[in-house]
Image 1 (cartoon, rainbow, N blue to C red):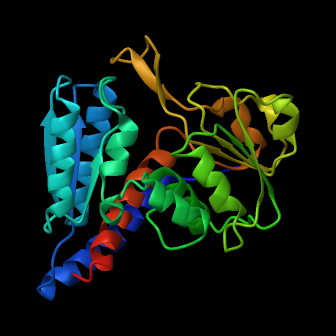
Image 2 (image 1 turned 30 degrees about the vertical axis):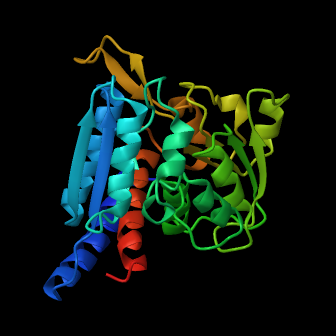
Length: 292
């Protein structure tokens, strides 16, 4: 069994990005600038945004954080998005999800300029991705593909089962892995809450990707010997042995499943860091597309 070490891999990627930015700076060219909008005080969202801002610093990017209370109106948020769309100093920006119930997330996503949509959530980017055209790909699916590429895992002709059909992970990942290109060409089964005989389906898979947000869902008896298992889940669960009173858990029962795997990603330290690295890659790409 070998770990798919997303932490180490992401550090290599960010070093590559940092070198590229340093070269740009020495040539007097523009430095990438990522902006983030954070609404409310959700602990998870704050952590995610702070991780992204720290990654900007590590890559040599400029970054700007705009924070709003939970009570911010949809109109104010949309106006800010319009301002960022028009601001030529900003190469890409994100609106951290989830948003308060009174704000329409779809309306917010549609308001973002697709050329600055480094999260890859806009329908235009999703559509281009599906057609195998150049696009900003959602950071988590992109990070998973990059992790597979860096470890040179063989995907051609393999059976892949993805558990979870979200618009930001499962669905786009199923398309990417099935496309006729390097580190694609899988036969993909996209499963979800209505899938019957899930255990039997998973046992046929050469690659299992768990992205449903249920800690420890994937058990030893759902994975065949030698499978590749990629765990996208990350949930806080109670753990009195920790000073914090909680620990992070993935969607895979790691201790029981790992011995059966050829490769497996840990939580934390697997897909999470790759997601942040992919966001940095998208931001650098956004600037390059503008010819700056």
